Length: 432
Figure 1 (cartoon, rainbow, N blue to C red):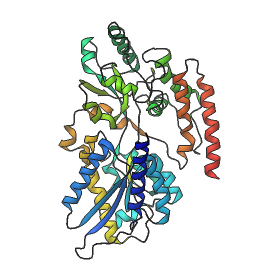
Figure 2: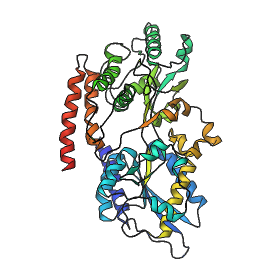
Figure 3: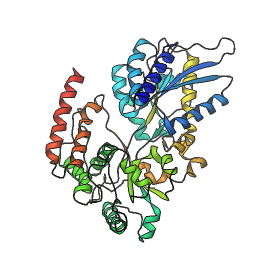
Figure 4: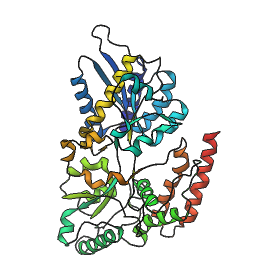
């Protein structure tokens, strides 16, 4: 643990030192005329490897015009560095930000509107070339602050071999999911008492699971004023739909830790596993004959106009407040980079992400990817509600979801009321 701590400390220091060398006003190369761009992101692991590949590809194709210098760090330190360095005029030229944070950072002035940059550059970046709900979520006070790179979501990974063994079809709704999980669990426990139909971690990605259930049961994260709206009849149904898979349906053991459910699936001790699209490559590393099905209709038995909805977030390109006024050449370089990365995000999709660009999703390269359609119809994707204080209003519910999943005697109404009380306190502090 000490070595791991030291490693992260060194990486964080290197990030800060690198960032402090010149900031966002990186000069053009006066000899070659090449524009240099500093690009920050929090993409590591398998995601990071693909991003490094795509940046290298951009640089190779723009070798005489633009050179991108990429800096990356783990997510927690990444946002701390943004908060600390951008106000000191030591930020990058362009960076990645999670979509649900865009309004907050726009409100604080750490990122700047980009519509004029798009217009000035003449680069063809327009709303109709993207999943429109994602694109529209990046407006704050009628100004555009980002361009989406992708959408990522959760899906249900399933063991094809086991479904075939028991003569079962891929589930399309909650009743079929529970029935299949119980059937295979009963059969496999004869020889393996540690087998479960759908083991569920109580910690991660439970916030995603609850959000899917909230949407499908007709609930809201926040109201129009940005206040918590999930302590409601719909919120209670949503929490029960998740926790009851453990306590009433008995298809998951109690108190499954983070990634224990993942390991159970990867080692053949689970039929189903709820996990993010970002884990797709990790699944491929194991000898499991798997498929992916969407979470649509998996948290309610009542079909409605929301029952198929799937929560999504986006890695989004944003421009931090620059250290000095951006030249037209710099704006052109930034928008050229963003446009290229999005048009070629079928490469990024190999990390498990779904391109936000309609152009990229229409390519043969993307269409030939074997698993991505399993995460659901893009028309069912729903981005989180927009507010500068979304995190303060909604995040207190996460620990209450964990509490409900961990305790068979939970009280959904009480837990959600507690979350709202905490959220109001956080909102009052944030709003001043």
